[in-house]
Image 1 (cartoon, rainbow, N blue to C red):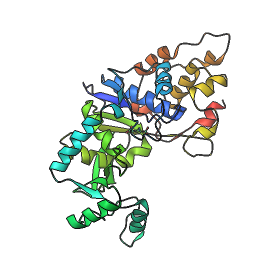
Image 2 (image 1 turned 90 degrees about the horizontal axis):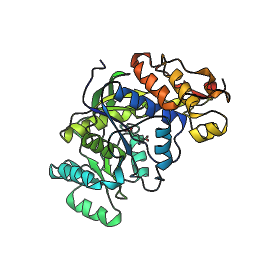
Image 3 (image 1 turned 135 degrees about the vertical axis):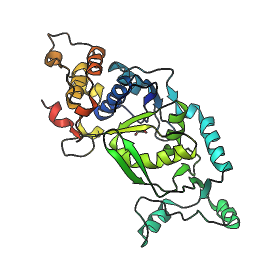
Image 4 (image 1 turned 120 degrees about the vertical axis):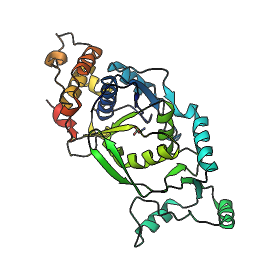
Length: 317
Ligand code: GLU
């Protein structure tokens, strides 16, 4: 199942602030999956949402301090908009794109209608006449949607097996002109030769639509591994409000990076012997890169727990 290949894995954070231990655990997993299968590994900064994008440097520093490495220069989405322009033009030439003038409210109302499916775009603007489109264009700028020919798709996930999910006419470019996540991720993964996508399982439901889009652009969808999220004490998805969750905060609370990586190793069911003394001031801790190498040597994806990791319990140990 985990045969060697010459492909490529990736980690693709959105630069919206410091990474927390849940993000870092996913990054470590993406690296372990890629390197244990002889893949290249690339780092991509997903900064197309200009309102939320911050300086990615602290994220990059944190990934380095864990011992992660990557091949080639860091890819920054906002620096290569031409590849999204080209892929969009290709779909447009083939009649697979249409303008959508719906507001969020209109979509919410439409899905509440008797045949509406929550979370699914009901196709309201799919069949507008040219005259209607011209009229609506004078009122507001349109988003661009994919004319998808299928309602559901099955993908293969290394952890979840076959997963079937709904596919709707997803947004390619938002009304404000920014390329949408689902589109950019597919184009960039294909451009970088990514054939293995490891990320949080909150994105599992997006995989079927991304696979459909990849095929429509003539690309083979990658293999997926959607890994469990890290949750806080109350069982909700870990967030900054859960206290010390970033490397900087944990360090300030007396937990050096090697100790944090040791917690991550244990949470992955890793067979490495984690140095329990790493927290102690008299003991010079093993550098994270050494521990990470040992984690790689013994990495066993089948030992990976499939339930969320509750961080607060381990932090309190
Ligand atoms: N940039 C996305 C995030 O930080 C991840 C996208 C992906 O891995 O496909 O949630």
